[in-house]
Length: 138
Ligand code: ZN
Image 1: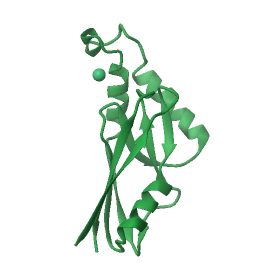
Image 2: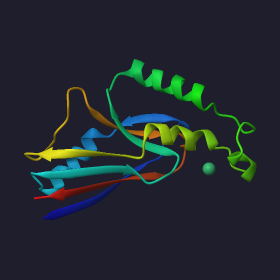
Image 3: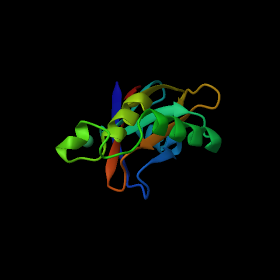
Image 4: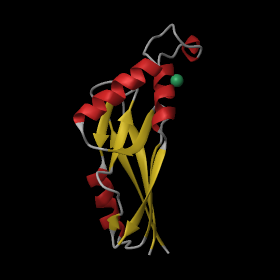
């Protein structure tokens, strides 16, 4: 069995962002030489997510509005922010959007359903943060 580990770095201009990272994950699979196996992609920070969905800008706006309704940004709204932080909303948004995805690798490619793409979801950005890509197989 082979394995390949790689880190992707992000530093978003805005506090919140969704970035399609599918091409970078495909590049990592190519580099690994693995034809049959599994690919794990996970955020390494507790205020950002990795998730799979459609690359459609209206849907991304819907996600943003939905998340803002569930966990609005606001320093005085949350117990976590009594510690001097201001990112309680980002922790909550991350939890609902998920930490990681696992995708099958078949014949050297991500074995997606229709319209599936991998996204990095940032909820407390404007600083360097990373994502782990780990591919195992043969
Ligand atoms: Zn925090």
